[in-house]
Image (tube, rainbow, N blue to C red; front, side, top):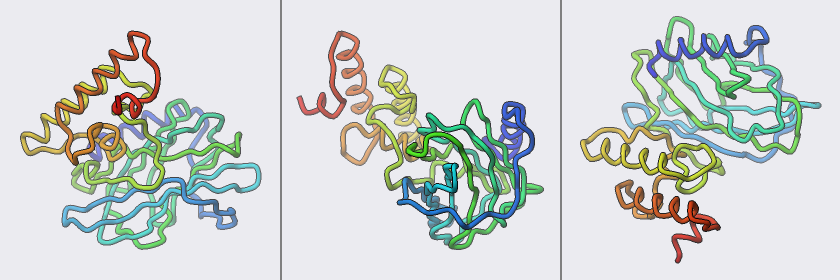
Length: 251
């Protein structure tokens, strides 16, 4: 999804939001920070790395998810979209852009997806400590939401998604490449697509969380052998088998 697609996505999200415009006001700094729940790092075309940190905090009766820059390097972005994972029990309240992120941000209440584009698609040069966005939710204070990056682009619409790597405890289940909470033939299909892309010198087409889920056989590569194991486990479950994928692989 190039920058024009992110713009279109943001417009679609605005229609879904059904609650008015998203705030771009200055950030409050009085939230009590709790331990980091997940983190992301991005690579620019020059192979410099910028680390994005996602933290959960509690501010009064609200749960706050903050995306900030831990290490900027020379990364510049003009738009992004991501989804909030494990948001069960939470109701979206508002979003606040970081002070440098002047542009349009929308949150889809029905999809838990966020889309941002900078004004006039201008690139934003990041600096250590920059807050990208804060998302406020009401509801279950024990919820542990994380972030799955969907797309990051520069001002030319170059897709940087495949250059994102995730660390920390970003949630994923081994074999669940589609990130839909189950392991089936669709996951094997996505692994084979990624393998085909990589075999021809292209990008895998998977984000960092999906790549972790796809590498079923721990050998630092994604290939047909991983897809085969996924299909075996799917068949096992379909015939009454039970247990985790990790347990199945040890048999």
